[in-house]
Every structure is written in C-alpha cells, then in structure tokens.
Image (cartoon, rainbow, N blue to C red; front, top):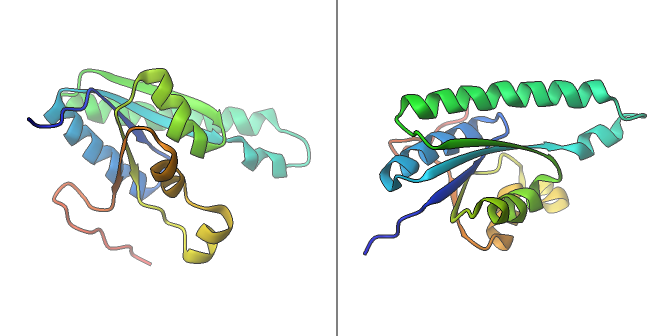
Length: 156
C-alpha cells in the first residue's frame, strides 16, 4: 500500500529554495489528492532591531506576504489543486512551522526548501529546515531539486 498524505504544509519565505519546495508541494498534492497549506511566518525578531517597534514595517511585511501567497494560490489552482489554504503567522518560524501549524491543521507532511545558510550561519542561528527535521512529529521533505529532480545551479 502506498503512503497517501492528506494535508501538506509548504513553508515559503520568498526565496528561490522555497519556490522549488512550493512547486514540488503542488505536484505531491495533486498525486495525493490532498489539501495544500501554504504558510509564511513573519519573523518578529527582525523588528526587534528597530529602536521602537514600527507598525508600518509589520504592515508592509504582511501586505507583501499576502500578495506572495495569493500568487502561490493562483498557481496551485491553475495546476488543479482545488483545496488550498494560506496561513500567515507572526513569531519565530522554527516552532511555528515544526509544531504549531501542523497541530492546528492536522498536517502529515511538511515540505520546505533547503537552507541557503553557510556552515558558520548554521552554527550560530541554525536553519529552519534543520530544526523542523528534528522537531516535527510528521514527515518532512527538504526540497533541493526542481520538478524534474535536477539540482538548480545558483548564479552567484
């Protein structure tokens, strides 16, 4: 018997790695006839470096997230994924993606892009994908390839 996922969570942050994960999540959603949840977590720690919390920054981040999520929803529906939900959360991405959203939405697969951090950055702040792999209670798929399973070359 094949594993069938019912609810797939894909975390997006605007990076090219997240876009690869999203496109692959749409494909997996189609094959499983599953529900797709597209989540974006606005990291409120970024606002703590501003001398006083600027509500305009949070508002702008929310508006950008809403537009990005709507673009993703439009793509998913064009690919015949009818059951698509978006989630915008505020806080620290690691526990929200690994625990909070999966518990709230009965997620059985989390898909995310591979980290873009170098070894030193991972040592000091750790990657979201690394944390999710260690702490999620459901399956986790870290996406490193495009829809043809080809490694995408960075143009650095």
